[in-house]
Every structure is written in C-alpha cells, then in structure tokens.
Length: 182
Image 1: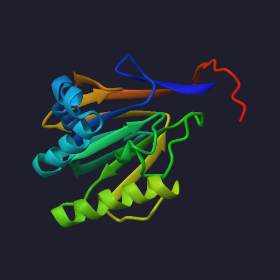
Image 2: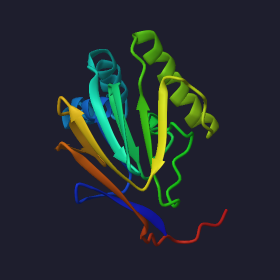
Image 3: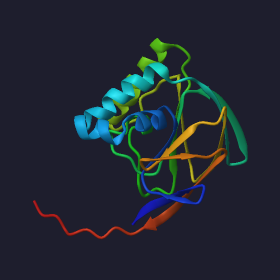
C-alpha cells in the first residue's frame, strides 16, 4: 500500500512541478529524448536553469498562507533520488500520508547553484541537508497560486492550472509485485 494523490482532480502518483521542473520537462520533447535518451533531461535542465524566471507563489495549508518568490515549487508523493527538485527532506516517503513540498527561495545565480547542490547532496545521503534558501514542508493538502500563472507538470504530463490544489490519499494505491529473492 502506497499513497496516491490528486492534483486538481487529476490522479498523481509521483510528483508535480511548477516553474523549473515543468519548463525542463517541456524542453525535453520526444525528438530530443529519442536522440539523447536520459541526457535530454540533463540538457534541458541546464537550459531551464539559466532561463527560469522567478514568480510569486502563494501556498495555503493547514490554515496558513505562505508567500514566496521562487523559480520552482515541487510537490512530491513518491519520487526517486533522480528527481532532485523533490529532495528537500532527502527522501520522499511514499507511504506516510503526506506530500513533500520543496521550494528554493534563493535570489542569485550563485545561491541557486548552491541550493541545487544541496538538493543533490540530500538525495545522495537520503537526509535533509540544511540550506537557508530552501523551504521544505510536509502536508496532506495544499493550494498553490502563482503570479504570473506557471506551467505545471504532473507525472510527466504538461498542464495549465492556477490555482492548483493537491490532496494526498493515504494508502490510496495497492501495488502487486512478485516477491523478489536474492
């Protein structure tokens, strides 16, 4: 049993990205992926890193309203370490009933590079690494509004929505798998 989620009534298993991640996935089109494979995402991430513009993000959760200026918001239900933007806590737990929200709030290129390195380090050591330019939240429900409206990627699919509501469904997905023996 693992968690599932909804993003504006669209089922979500892995994660959603607003801003940076959506732009990266959008730039890694089918032709680019066919030609370069997984490297297409690395190339498109580098390109997006230098072109991503910041936006205002308003997050409503648990009766609070939080506002940030950022270039990315990632909401993860389950994500492998290769989904670097989801690694604010070091590891996304797929069966805790919570969504992991990662928001880099740095405002210079040098700080952005440092924050990206922090996220990569978190993924490698599977533990949260402190960074004053990184906001990490865990919640079972949130509403995100961006200004200006941003492109959204949900489990690899590009969408348009603003505001965006996320709801975690604890133990919402049953996975059947053969027993592995080593």
